[in-house]
Amino acid sequence: MQAFQYFDAIGILVFAFIFADAMFEAREGHATWRTYLRAVIGFVGFFIDGYFVFLY
Image (tube, rainbow, N blue to C red):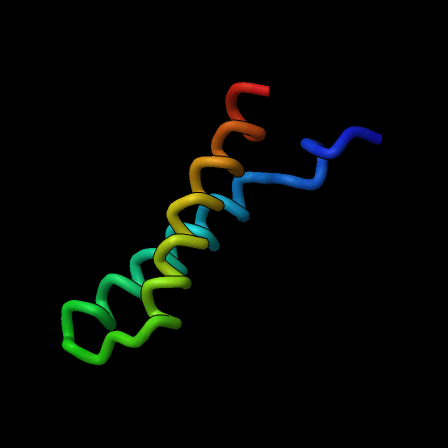
């Protein structure tokens, strides 16, 4: 079984929600280093998962 089979379209929604939630928290002024870490994880995860779902 190849690694890309573990990724699906639900993962894209999860990473997008993580990113959007972190950005909303940052806009509200309650940002800490964990907020920016979640934003990076959401952003990078969104593109990696999107690559595996649509292009691999």
